[in-house]
Each structure stands twice: as structure tokens, then as C-alpha cells.
Length: 607
Image (tube, rainbow, N blue to C red; front, top):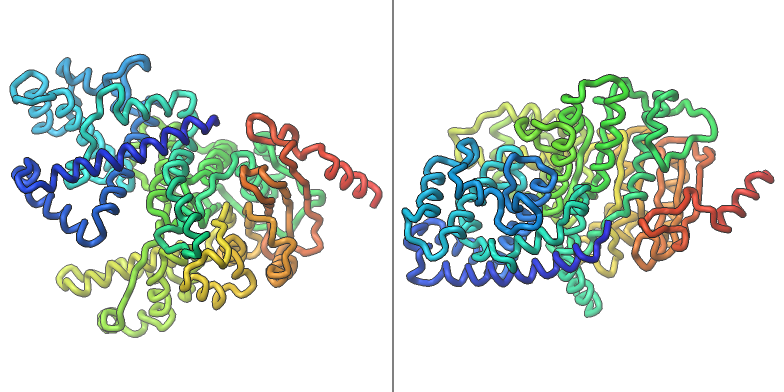
């Protein structure tokens, strides 16, 4: 995918939206503004939000919400997932969005646009309501109605708009210089062939903030929890995603079904040299659970979706049922960045919609768990224990609930003390505290924390990830101290801690497939980690990559390990040099035919 144009657009769009949302905010907050007269409670809520955070944070939040929605709607338009295009014209060489053109002809979808809104739009477009810019006002109403209509299918991305988000919508949406025109120019039909375009746009949208964070590091400013996502987001080249998924999820299926035609769909699959007998037994596709504990915008999971789809097809599942089965049974993502988590859920929903025309009607939410900071004090926990009984509220449960007080800082590295969090959650969900306000609030917090704990439990067959990279020098004081206490073998960098954590999420013979910095293989500070990996796993395969192969100025390694596999097992290794990567950003041949790999092959033949 050509990303230069996307990067320029995303960075310019962020600046433009911050400016326009800021200008709208100034108008809304004026003493005699129309918003104060017409929506006094909404303006009051806006002022409350500013007091709780800051004016700049509110502007940043709303600017991103609109960027996110415009990009999502454009992707939906281009791929024809709705009957009428919402932010795009009927023909690409036009400017006016199709939904507005249809409204001018009296065509308003009664299922998606409420009756009172249809009346307002008709009055504006047919001069029944005086307006300086009737097209603009009518289109704003149409846009809000469409976003609200998408709420049922994608509530994580399209929250119902009846608040200050609508008040702060940019003024100009229809001109040739508007944000929507820029969105259409960048998100061309070619760019929208793959939903990964949304992930690229998000990475570029926050790239300037990432630069600011790293400038701060030079001045010894530690990375705070709210800045961890910007500092650690790194998009994974698609061929590396395929290498990791093919040799973990794909390998698991091939071991259970040696004659499977799936092998023909996996470009980077490496067949085991010897027949294996120590593997997880899988009776049916629904049994497989795949998790990305640092899922970002979902790039790993979307390819896993494709492979799982082929697996379901192989066993004869009705195609109309496959997308729902995959999102219900197979794929799980964990993330601390709410924005990235929303995009991961959106990406999986788009994969499902591409395969199933009526998927939006099913209102299925993908299993993307955005870890939230959930603090508890002793008083509320004591009262909750008294309400549900001591036998249920065990010491391990109390400890687990406490673990999420800094979930925004520690993320998926949290290892819940409660071994059966999922079972306890199911039991407590039956409790009813509707008549007790204080207990109901605590109960809801407990359920949310236990859901997070259950997601962080060892229930997965395959763990895949491009975990965050952050050395000890960048960690804030709490994260640094916590890392030393909980991950003494890998405390030097987040990526190494995730390597350990990935193994804890698996049962025996489960697969961990991660692309990380190469330093864990060489530096003395990772000696204990290396010993653990060599003792507790079998390295099934590894692609060791030179500087710039992933577009970053250091070496990396894509490694697939089997937990509990024999340390004597013979893995498949290759080295990838920058010169081995072609113009399409993937290896010209795989394994590459560079001198290092040829030499290794000669040595193997001589053994």
C-alpha cells in the first residue's frame, strides 16, 4: 500500500480538525450563543468535561472522533456496504455526497433517519426553514442520523450523537477544500481495498504526537500512561503478519489435519521437518482461540480472520454463518488505547461484512477488550464482600480487582491472581443490585474488572503480537518499579515482558508468535529470558531481520515458539536483509536467497 499520501493527509487532517473544532468550541461557549439557547444541558455537559480534563483535551478528543468517523464512513462508502453513500458522491469525479443529492430529490431512508429529522431536512432543502446555508445544515442532520443508525451495528465506533460532539462538528463539510474532500482524495478506491488503510491512517494521525513524546525523552521526560499508545504504535508489514499467523494458527490446523488444503493458502508456512505428536488437539474450528494482547488496530487479527474463514470453508460450514462464528468463538484482542481498540473492532466488522452482506444486522461486537483503569477502595470492597458472601469474595478475587487500578499503565502485562475469573464473572452477572445505588455501582465495576481478568487468563491456543517497544529509560516510575517486581527476567523492555506474558496466556503446546526487537537474543540483560525460552519452549521458526526491513533502524525477529515443546526440536531459521525486500514491501523470495541463508543451507547439508 502506498502510504506517503495517507501520511500527509492524516497529519494535515489532524491540524485542520483541531483548528475547526477549537473554533466551534469558542462559538458554542459564547455567552449568547445559539447552542446555549437551544441545547443548554449539552453546553453544561461540555463545560463539565472541560473542567474535568482541559479545553485542549476536549478539542483533541472530538477532533479525533470526527476524523475516525469520516474515515470509517468513506471506507464503507467505497466498498458499497450501504445502499447510499454518506460522505462520498455517487460518482468519484463529483463533490456532493450522494445522500444529500438523494435528499434533495425527496429520497430519505425512513429506517435510518427519524421522522422529525426527515421533516427538518425537507424544510431546509425546500426553503421552509430560513438558513444561510441550507445544504450544509441539512447535510449535518443527515450525517448525525447515519452515525446514529450505525450505532446498533458498531456501538464502539458510532456512539449515539446527541451531545457536544455534534455541536463541535466542523462547519465546512461540503466545499472542495473541506475535510471530507480531503478524505476522499486520500482514501481512494485502491487504498480502500484493504481495511488496513484505517490502521495506517491512525498511526499517521498520531505520528506528530509520537515525535513530541520522543523529543521529551531526550529531555528525560518519562512516558506517561496516556502517551504510551502514541509512543509504541508500530504498524506491522503484512508479510510478517502472514509469517507469524501461518506458522502458529496455520501450523496448529495442519498438525490436526495433515491433508488439509489450507497449506496452499499460506505463502509463508514452513512445514515441520519431522512428524510431531505433541500438539493441541482441535476437534472443530470453533474450539480455536487466537489472541493479540497488544492488538493495535487489528492488523494481525484481520489476517487470522482470513485464515479461519478458509478453515471453516474446509469443514463445510455454511458461508452465511462463518463470519459470526469467527467473531463469536475465535478472535480476541486486548489493547490499552481506546482509539486503536475501536479500529480493531471496526476492521474485524468490515472483514465480516465483506463476506456476509447482512452482517450489520446481526449487531455482533468483536471481542476487543480495551483495558480500563478501575480503582477500588477498601470500604466499597468490604461492603461488596458482605453483600455477595465471603465464600465468593475470596482473597484472590480482592487481589485481582486491585490489579486493575493502573490498567492503563500495565496493560496486558497484568497477570490476574484469580485463576477462574471467567467462572466467577458468570456467577456474579446473575446478581441484581438494581435497588441499591452504591452496591450497583460497585457491582458494575467488579464485573468490568473480572471481564478484563477473564480476557487475560490462559484460555488461548495461539497468541500473536507485535508488542510495544519501550526501554527502561522511557518507563515512568510506577511502570519501571512494577516491571522489576513482576518481570525480573525481561524488565529491560516492554517487548521482552510481552514475550514472557505471551507464554503465560497459553496452555501446554500453545503457540506464541511475536515480532520483536532482536536484542533479546544477544544482550546479557536478557540471559534469564533466553534460558526460560530455551527451557520451556521449542522455537519452531524464526525470521531474523536486518535494519530497516520493518522500516525501523534496528534489527528485529519474528519468532514462533511452542510452549512445552521439546527444546531439542529443530526449528527453521532464516535471515532477511533489506535488499531482500521488493518494491511491494515483501521479500522477493522466501526464504530469501542471500549469502547468509545459502551458507546456512550448505552447513545443514553437511551435518
